[in-house]
Amino acid sequence: MPGLLGKKIGMTSVFSADGKNVPCTVIEAGPCVVTQIKSVEKDGYAAVQIGFMDMKEKHTTKPLMGHFKKAGVTPKRHLVEFKDFSGELNLGDTITVDLFNDASYVDVVGTSKGKGFQGVVKRHGFGGVGQTTHGQHNRARKPGSIGACSYPAKVFKGMRMGGQMGGERVTTHNLQVLKVIPEHNLILIKGSVPGCKGSIVIIEK
Image 1 (cartoon, rainbow, N blue to C red):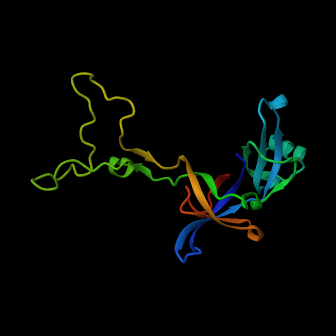
Image 2: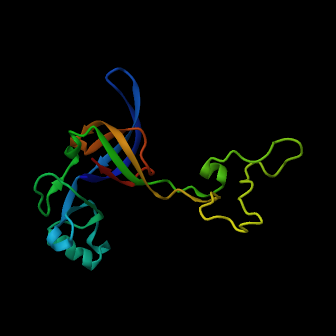
Image 3: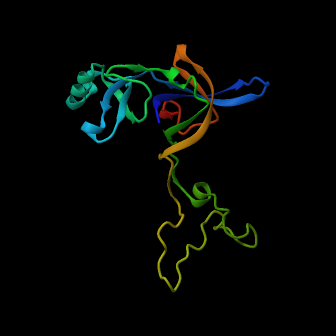
């Protein structure tokens, strides 16, 4: 699906036509530049690679500098590929947030906030073990039995336990587009999207 790279600005709320206060996320979507066009004959699949956010030449590796010079564009910090773009695109073309003018819903891909090492109550929603009275004092947020017994004398793979939480690629589907502001490259999407303020997200039609 075609889409754009963007930067999450933050959250706010807007009033709908019927007077309801709707929470929304503000994303700076594009402008993105076409840096490569892949074809079935040469690359084995058809796709369009786009770049977002300028980067200084001194921070760009030589292979990437050659890649950008071939496309005739300035170095870009973030690159991503999309398939099924409608219309003919050429190297160096600019794609703006106007792409979403006719879109009612989008999918947003981002990296969730990192939570560090968390226990089973926060990570998986466990209810805790045992009563909080009758002398119990050290098992309120423990996982309880993890299934190991005489046979099989092991813990099965995939057992939900404490561990690293967050910092993962997350896709949120079918988010409603509330408003597109082309003059500021902004798109307002109903609800929340993965990631913190300033993080890079992928918006797909």
